[in-house]
Amino acid sequence: MIVSVSRRTDIPAFYSKWFFNRLEEGFVYVINPMNPKQVSKIELNPHTVDCFVFWTKDVTPMLYDLNKLKDYKYYFHYTITSYGKEVETCILDKRKVIDSFKELSRKIGKERVILRYDPIFLSEKYTVDYHIKAFASLCNQLDGFTEKCIISFIDLYKKTKFNTKALHIKPIEITEIETLSKEISKIAHKHGITLEMCSEEYNLSKFGIGKSKCIDDRLISKIIGCEVEVKKIVHKEIFVDVLKVSI
Image 1 (cartoon, rainbow, N blue to C red):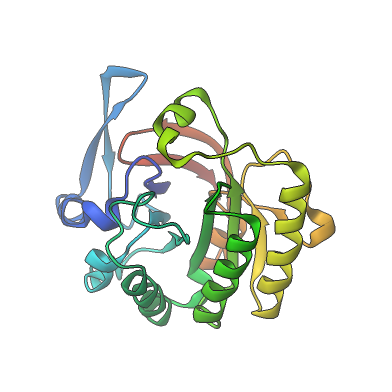
Image 2: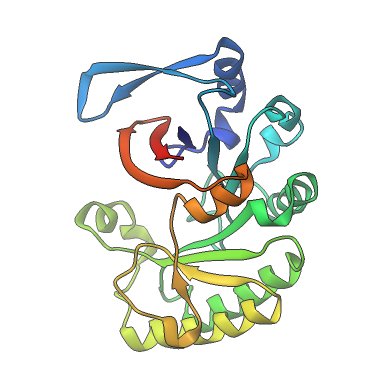
């Protein structure tokens, strides 16, 4: 079983104590968001969990309790963007976030810490040139601390437009996507970082940008030491996403 912790909220940043309490108890109850009356009990122990996949924008609260994961296999998706506090109100200090990224990489290995620079959006403030310069600065600071970076461009769904109205996000043109992709791909390559795109309709392979997997069975196979194939999502929960694998 692969447990995603979690794409619905930042557990490492805000609920790490809760998570480690669940590990100590050996189980977690999860509610099906499509059917609140359906509650599942998921066992959490080294025999049932093949790999944890963590998602965070700030690992700091969890960083010095990683010894509690010594019996588990895991890796991190770690999002760092160049946006200010008007966008990411809960990120207190980007410098500390970057320092924590480096410390995590030192502790568990750079191949197990995936940088995410996403979602990318454009506005009067956050232009193509702005993102190119910001990405170059970020890669310079994280040189040697990660092997992969995943990007994506914002999808302006109706709810997204409403929630981000104050940011004055503008529709992104394909020419802007290609210009930005070409430049940041060069930057990533310079720093030995493989650049991939998450769940996008665009084919950017001509810029050396491949397609990514949120749950990367190739990386998990490497981490746990045997071949796995992610078959299907069994639960997609508010706090924990559980996926079955065939080994």
